[in-house]
Length: 314
Image (cartoon, rainbow, N blue to C red; front, side):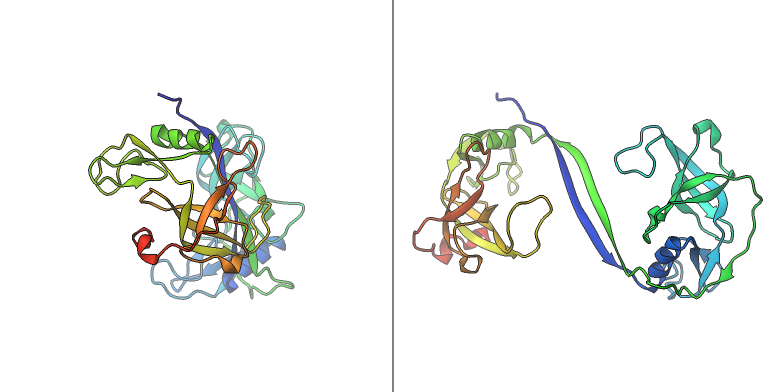
């Protein structure tokens, strides 16, 4: 049996969102070293603020300023900070109820060790030297000896140059182990071959193989070489350039039913203007020197496949 593959993988993308009036005021306030909450109909002050009451669903717009000091309600020690976490040295994750607020804010506490942290301890905000209108404008919390207050004052939420949108990077680091079936598939690709597995019950050939038939639920083991040519079953035109991907937009990504396969895989279409790609287009893989998978698929020059030949693979 061939060795089962594994590799570290990273999924990373920027998440962009626009802000409503409440979140805009909250983040702009942080930039100005001001913490805002929102008052509910029953008088509670929620920090961070939300646009709708979580109990009554009532729209909330009454902003109020709370203190930059507060009390730890619960905590957890982080002995080994990860990449891009707020502090490089070990720290505590804390929920802090700021003075004047009725709910707790999640952030980090700069402490010398877990023995220096306790529920009920007093803390205050340490502001970041450079602030842009994000939760990271609060660099962290730090221990504070002052007494608690319950003061909060109404605030208009109006600031010069308000923050209207944010971009949050999302990233997932993990180790992927494809298993027996997909390891065989990937090893075959490195030899410029494409293999699937046939279901012993329905006799369909699945590419990439899963190790089991998704229709019948039985294990698959019989390898079947398919392609290399195939048919575009459906496609999309990509107009947004991906980070670290050296492909000019627009380009086409398509589902391709390789000859002999009963499941379409996806791949990029090249060698043809994007607006000439069509369903039924016959394509073949293009390999780069040393590549472990096709770089893209290009037209073969054959007549387009008849719709009836691939309609079940849409």
